[in-house]
Amino acid sequence: MKIIDANIILRYLLNDHDELSGKAATIIEDNKVLLLREVIVEVVYILEKVYNVKNDEISDILLELLKYDNIEVDDIEVVEEALALFGKRRLDFVDTLLYAYNKVKGYQVYTFDKKLDKMLEE
Image (cartoon, rainbow, N blue to C red; front, side, top):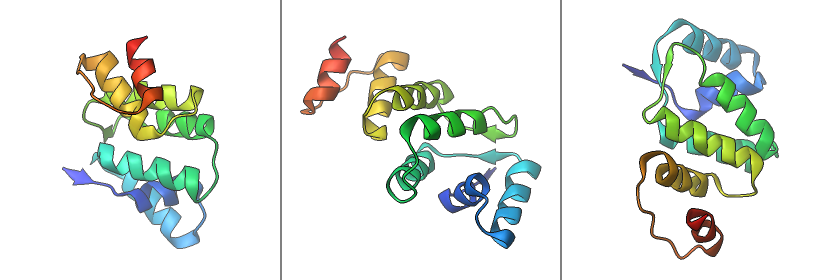
């Protein structure tokens, strides 16, 4: 299995570097690849904090990317739920992942984060 990292995804999504964006497109479009949750977290963080992309745009872009037949993501249902929530609410992406693990898989989440805890109780 081939794994892609955050800068491959970022060059592909942002299309901001002539040479590297083209290489990223070839890698993503011509291979069966594994996209790790950890890499998705990094991509979300960079898009939000460095490129000032809004949550709903990040959600839409990544949910569209996850539809590619050649991209595999472990626990895809959890990631999709987290991205959908991230696009709707002003939460840290890791918190949306924790929430999604609770809602999709039934995992109990322990947290001191009052905002997350309140959502988990809903």
